[in-house]
Every structure is written in structure tokens, then in C-alpha cells.
Amino acid sequence: MTIIVVMGVASSGKTTVAAGLAERLGWAFRDADSFHTPGNVAKMSAGVPLVDADRLPWLDAIVAWMNERTDAGENGVVTCSALKRAYRDRLRLSRAAIRLVHLKGSRDLLAARIAAREAHFMPPALLASQFATLEEPGADEDAITIGVEAPVERIIAELSRVVSVRDDRPAQTG
Image (cartoon, rainbow, N blue to C red; front, side):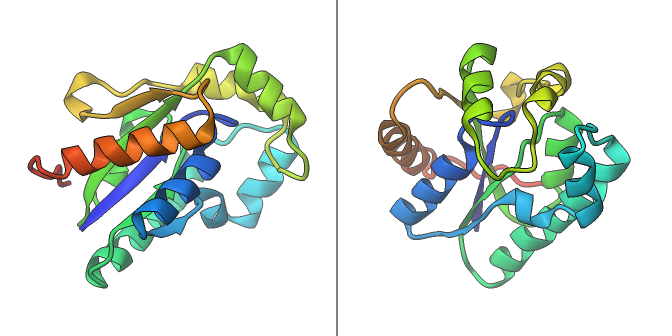
């Protein structure tokens, strides 16, 4: 089974794009924010960046969800900032074939988006730490990188097309 992991820094549109893509493909969807512990949410709400020790149980919960989908014979789409290569490698421990989608935008665009958010635990001040942490996917990760400046429907349509074309290629497994 295939799981598409939609990654990127805060306000890159992960949830909107992933939910739209999952709906278009008829696949299961889950937002990685729902996997955070209350302690992680409290830290981020207070403007404190998470450290690797905070992220490991979160990443493991995402892997468990991916394995549940695979065991159920379902494809899925999940969001995950997946900022570091080590985090993406941990996600690859899943039994699912992973398709990585990197949503990429400029600091100015994403800062404007995060400032406009309402009722979200991620404060604008943490965007800088996300960019500082980001290790863009390497060529060996075979990520689909797409800019987020276009309208969401266009991004979803392009990803849907690219994912269906890439499904003809051998799946990447962990």
C-alpha cells in the first residue's frame, strides 16, 4: 500500500493540500498534528520549539497509523513536517510504500500565512526555527517538490497527476 507523506514547514499548506489530495484520490487522510501529545502542543503554544526527544513518539505514532492503513489494505495521505532527514528515515520504518511530497514556499509567503492563522497552536515566532531545522529532501529520497504559490486546487491536481504517474514505478519501502 502507498502512503503519501505531505511535508513542509508550518503554513506551507500541508493540511489543506493533503486533505484535498486524499479526497481526490479516495484515500484515508490524517493530519499529523492530531498525533502530538498534549505536552508537545503546550510547548509549541508557548513558543518553545520541539526537540528530537519530543518528536520521536509523535513520529512513531504516525508510523503506527501508516502500518494500520497498510494492514487494512488501504492507501493513505498524512501530513508531517518531516523537517529532518532522520525524521523521514524514521517514517520509512513503516511497512507502507512512502511517497514524499515536499511543499516549498518562501519565508515571506509562509510568514504571512502563519500570521493570518486563527486558533492554531503554532505561533509565528516558531517559523524561523522550522526553516533553521529544515533539511530539504535529497535526490536519493525521490521527493516530489512543489511550490505553494499556485492556487491549492492547481497544486492538488498536479500532485494527483504526478502521483498516479509515479505509481507505475517501483515503490520505495523502508
